[in-house]
Length: 469
Image (cartoon, rainbow, N blue to C red; front, side, top):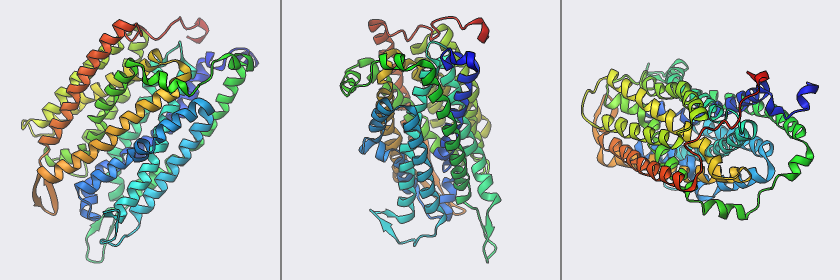
């Protein structure tokens, strides 16, 4: 250990991958809650009398504070000024508080006629908790991105980011696959013999996991402090600190805005889709509600395997802009297939979802490691925050748009107590985001050729020492 401390701690392969595991687990816990309500949409409508507008409003709450109160941008500035330890711990606490409010809202019986700001009281309270959680998980996301740059710059940075995203996707998979069985397992029969699933139970599980994830992050802060000590006070002092004017430098960078636009367009066609994917499986592909989350659950499973693979590819051979363009083309194909009235059977939906998993892996594995090539490291916290802020406009607005479109234009008959919907128009909307993402990806590749960002070049700038192999 004494020998290790004569170097920077991130020169140790074991230590840098260990800290990656800790912060990745924290993000896994966050992503579990992010998507835990998606498979429950039919239950929310049947048990709690929500409709698609209520669900869309609740889902859009994720971005309320991040967008309108600029909490993400403020969080990014705090990250660059105060560092990853202070910011990350605060983000974890916000996630726990938000989840607690959401659990309180879903587990409590509200007067069906009670309203808050024009929405059902239960819906509004759940949305408020989700909005607070959204601030925490998004700031945690930019903090973890900066942590990876701090520990892996000049090394396996894209692979590390890919593995972190893959671990987070495990949280999404658990949410899609386990939520409905958990709600049914803890369900009860009323005095008339009617079965009622326990919708609050999966959210309680999320709350427990978030507490464990917060502990994991506290453990990480110990290693981060030791890393700063191994770097040394003189070297840290020599590094140019963040200045407020750096915000203006960042927003004046055309490459930054192209990355930000690609991010919001791509993720607007993926994450809001996940919120409705289980219902799509029920409505179009006749999958039973208890299994409806399994097929969308394949999407993050594919990303778990492929994102580190594509990240390693980017590390070693480059072609980051090209990977983003290919992923956008695949996104267009997938949503077009979901929109067309063909092969409305479960196995076709499974194949298309697997293809979406490829796209879901290609673009993020190249996009996030490309940001440090465009923006100086001292500005990374703010840059990631601004990108996430732009992304949150999509994560907030698109679910609300899709819920309104379904409720206004896509309603069918009520069958056995369930409202039916035609998902053709929503899928066409998602496909249009893919078309726009492709256009922005082509512009980004052209800008890279002009400015020489190095997006098509490998990330690994030197060989890993033989002692680490």
